[in-house]
Image 1: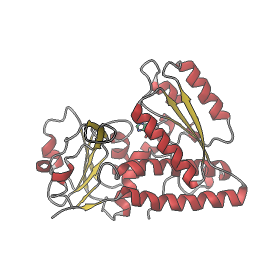
Image 2 (image 1 turned 90 degrees about the horizontal axis):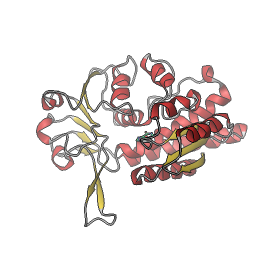
Image 3 (image 1 turned 90 degrees about the vertical axis):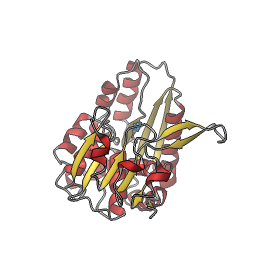
Image 4 (image 1 turned 60 degrees about the horizontal axis):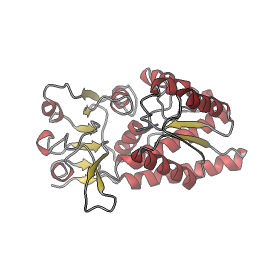
Length: 307
Ligand code: GUN
């Protein structure tokens, strides 16, 4: 039987409508407009299109976005100076520096320079540490988006065998951490696989939920999943395609056509996890603005409530 396709655009639209109401309320109550600074260094085409999508999404829900596009030869010192200015700017509640950065810039130094209270990506070591020990923290947007999709589709997480393929700081590591925690997003038994894993298929075949975040097409094929499992594809890979208008098309890490005949639920690429990542960035930005208004202690949580 063919899997139900999880429509990430639809779930994202639901959450964005909720956020638009929150933003309007915040403006009406206190005149506060949440502000996100977006920083892009260089001309990477994929990064440019992500950044444009993030800015457009801000405008749609009434969040102010401050566009900072810098040339590829920007020095680390210049970038750090910009971040320092944004840290001090009261109109800015969230700062997003699009990764990857050009090779001559130390990514960790840049992430560390962002004020943790404005770190809406959830990449600063303070937020990573808080998340790790289950304290209030900005959750990284892609893992948070994956969890919202699972929860809003009523996929049981507690007790589930979850196999995550990929161990990046942005997706694999934080997602594994959140899903293993004692919380309503967690209590799963999590295995993290990677390029040095001995028998990837032996792991993925046991999984109730497979999350593919390896950054390589066809990492997960139909013979690697058990019938009825849930498959979340975080991969975004550009494949040359002369018949496509732009000369390429996007595919995930999963052999979608074959795997959807075996899974019970599956996310497409595009239109699955992607729209959720941007949505959780908006969520974090609105929470950051509220944190400023109400102070961290008075916020019940920085993450979304269980729907
Ligand atoms: N590059 C790929 N994913 C992300 C993300 O979630 N945030 C930032 N800042 N850069 C990225």
